Image (cartoon, rainbow, N blue to C red; front, side, top):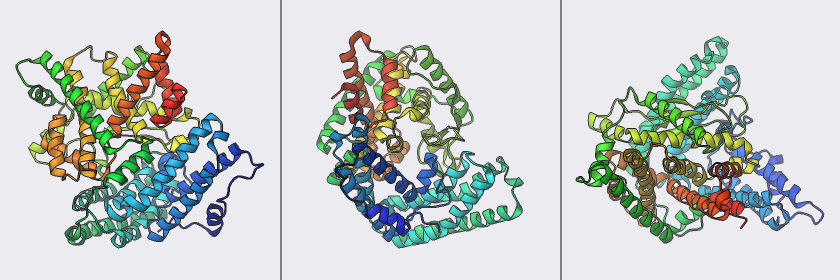
Length: 572
């Protein structure tokens, strides 16, 4: 196994021997820039699969080192970097670097919390399957280098899968039963991905033209990885599952700290609960008003159910989404919603088999990718192994107004447009450490903003589709606090999810299960609310001079966590 975490003595000396305060004659800006560069270099080595996704290809043949000793070395390195961050007085830096100083401090502390307290490497068996799947997928999704070069890197990563999964058996402890059950399913998806999707993708990229020795090495490594994954899945079922008695709850203190460090929001759980409860009440009242326009004799839940029952067939799902993306693009241009740096649109496809936990996603090239800039709008179609009832419930999520909202969120002007702005963000630190409340908050904000600006011509069905998706995000918020702060079971939280978001039981359960391993996924709704509040504050200050398109352009170019963007745009 190629272990990126095994740092050479020279690198270790650079990391641990430099924890000093800047000399009196040292320019603080130069010192900070050097520190930021060192941090990113070490980060890419410690997270090689992430580095590939970012468009940094120095570690394309490596997998992360998840041995306990490597984790400890990384924590020591983070501590040394934090000492150096603290030694630089941010008041001596220019405005851009002052913000970046806080971005760097929080990013380091967030990673430290993950490695020492949250410990997915120790408690979540899906971590290892995800590393294996993404390690290969990141090398074949985009043709950023000749196929032979990428196949060689993929071969090295595939050779690292068997020892990675052996290490998983040694590391995993105190695992929640649900996570083991989900890991069994996701590992089966990765096996299918390696057996079917990888050969098909490479065949279209010129794999057959490679020399025989290269192909034989790759195929042998792929078969060995498949066998190791099958053995891992069998071990999960026959061994780990029976002793998976861990509690997925983070607890109040860790939950609040994780949100503060990752998203820059310093809010306690009680304040978060109050914010969410008030928002749910407002949105339910809004739903009632819109539902009455459609049929005043039926309850809001009945009207919502009638809307969710209208959806494309599995065969029409992708084509319908493509049409909605084009309609949204035309609306953005006609109404000067945001400046589009290109006329390109994402490629719309079914979600790869290893990435089917969510309903839809956007796979974008990293900010440093120069060769392959394709973006993929992934949609999770029905699984043919599901029974008819589960397939029908799954498709309710893609009801026509809902699918329009999904297409706004993922593509236009959501994640895809935000991707286009990455090149304009003024520092590599911000490009790498974008917060989820900024990224997902922007996409979720776009759903409401587009309807507010007139997309759909006031059709109450389209508004209800947007409101249902907003309530879905508030139901996530509720589930996160219920599970990680209040100690509720997944089943209890899922029932509340159904009620809050007008969801059928099966998709509500899947959404609530996600809360156990994505505890701060309230960042969607929190981000949307905070962007709306920031926009209103800027509009109040600028008066008649306010331009929605200009606000969006400036906000996206900053690439800052929302609380810092508020300071930047309002001059606080």
